[in-house]
Amino acid sequence: MQANLALEQAPPIWVPFRFFFAAPLFGLLAAILLIAGGPEALASRWSAQTLALTHLLTLGFMGLVMCGATLQILPVLIGATTPRVQPVGLLIFVLLVTGTGGFVAALLQPVTLLMLTALTTLASGFGLFLIVVGIALWRSTSINATRTPMRLAMLALAITVILGVTLAIGTIYPTAAINLPLLTNTHLAWGLLGWTALLVIGVAYQVVPMFQITPVYPAWMTRFLAISLFSGLLTWSALYLLLDNKLPASLWMLLCLTGYTAFALTTLWLQYRRKRKVEDITLLFWRLGMSLAIAACLLWLAGLASPELADSRWQPLLLGTFLLPGFAVSVINGMLYKIVPFLVWFHLQHNKLAMAPDVRLTIPNMKRVIPVARTRQQFYVHCLAVMLLITAVAMPGWLAYAAGVTMGASFIFLWFNLLKAARLYNQYWQLLQQLAADKASA
Amino acid sequence: MERLLDVSQLEPPEPLERILAETPQLASGDHLHVLLCREPFPLYPLLNAQGLVYHTEYGEGGMFHIHIWDPLDTEADQQVRELISDDAG
Image (cartoon, rainbow over all chains, first blue to last red; front, top):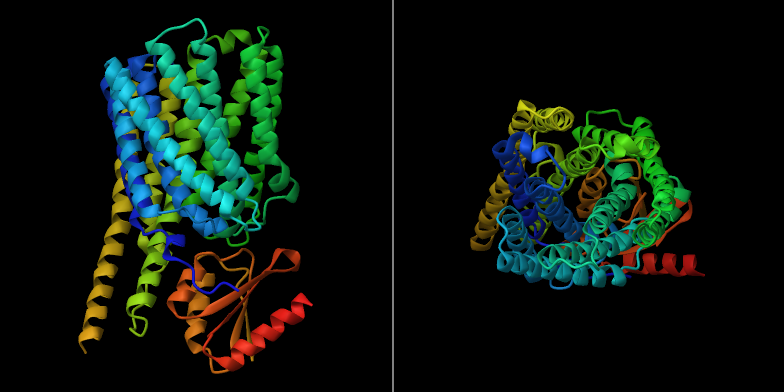
């Protein structure tokens, strides 16, 4: 029997919240960079501006949300406790935020010392994160389809970070031993298809049926997909890096993409069959994300069939647009509208039970934490931003500015929606403190 | 006496809300038997905050059975322990 569960199994609300609040600000910086750079920022995947923009989204927005959510999700979904989560969470946050800022600055204005400092900070932040999460996952004994994909996602993150650091050092100190284009593609694959996709898959197994009231994912998928994709990525990496002929690697990647497409199609199918047909904005974000993930797979397939397409300027940029703001940002943005209201509800409920259990105070329902109308409006702005980005990549020009402005508006909108939730939490928290003080003095 | 509460078809956080609405109403000798589709990890600290204890079992068809009771209620405590040892046997 389990009697007393330590409070560390429910991390204090500001442990994940500081990650969630900082993330959209990095998204906003990416938008500002796009506005400042205009079409030049989308001219080539190798330009400093594009790399900076990419990493503001991947490390800044996606990375911070995924790390904050992982620290929160582990106890909630699989009962895995993170050791000393409060001080460790704060340290990870500081290292990742300063490291990301320094790294992007060093991309735009190359200064060796700045880059090396930023790399050390980022590696330390991710290293600490992986250690504490690794301990938590190792401790977890829950019967749960999420545990294996999460373990594999963390391994993929480690590989992504190692490749990224190697790449950056290879840029500062060029050596024939490091083939920058090959390593860049490998780093990209592990970051997107490894860390991001496996984490989304693992969380989806629990969260999609739970929050969207869909049937559960098929048993064959929850049991075999994540390990198959991870093994597939490992094999692809070996083929891609070691063989001069890239055809075997491409064919192997095609196999992997079949797995990702199967997951996206299954998710869309489950959502179509959901039992409660009430409006759910998270559902719309996920549908957009899954659709663009499928579009990315099809575009990659088209590139395999047509080398001319694969060598074009815009195909890799379009792939990146489908996968980053299209798939990853959409899914993560949507998840925030479930995670944050749930956390507000949960922590207020816990505080009420601990501080003023006999007081008649109704904790606000999750749906009241962030009004649905506001989340719907932000979804429309996000949609427009993604469509403009896709068009701007295909037809560079003034559309790049429009895409930047819309993307910035979307992140600002998201930030203010999260702020609404934080204000509601503070309002009830102060009320609970007052009620507890009144009760104590009575 | 066992009070059965099936919240397996409800969307979060309704299951937790329903359970937390029931737990203050547990009479002497009663324990709550909850049916859920997934293990409710967020529920455990909330039960602890109320001074309650729980026992979780993973049953057939992927259903989780959670027994919740007041450890100071000797009658309920004995009932649940007998139930658990019967299931184990």
